[in-house]
Length: 173
Image (cartoon, rainbow, N blue to C red; front, side):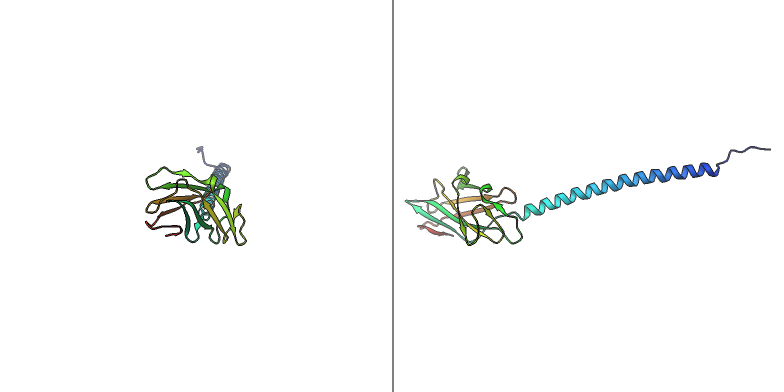
């Protein structure tokens, strides 16, 4: 009688169970990695949405007043669009520069006046606030200037204007 080594049913069952266990562990690891990647992409998306809805917009014109031959006070109105994120006004930075000049931070001299039901510390969507900046030295008629409004979170707003040569106060076009 000839003896042949065969693959018994018990051995086949053990190999099959080993394959199933390895496949289960591998799928568990892959699912975990997929859930982790999904969570991270969701966090990035929410962060992007928060930044894109955290912008301040210029609501109307700029207004200035002259002392002698230079503008000593500039008033502007800011608002947050519908669906935007509230902003703490003390955390907003105002960077000022004359044409070709050095940029300076005017945040410390910024004054706030509530318009309507808006408060002066936190600006909420659809509210409006008046901001008064005191540039020193201010632009003279015929010169240009730039104001960058930078909230703590969100995109900055750049306002570039040139005073008319006959400017004597009022609306800055």
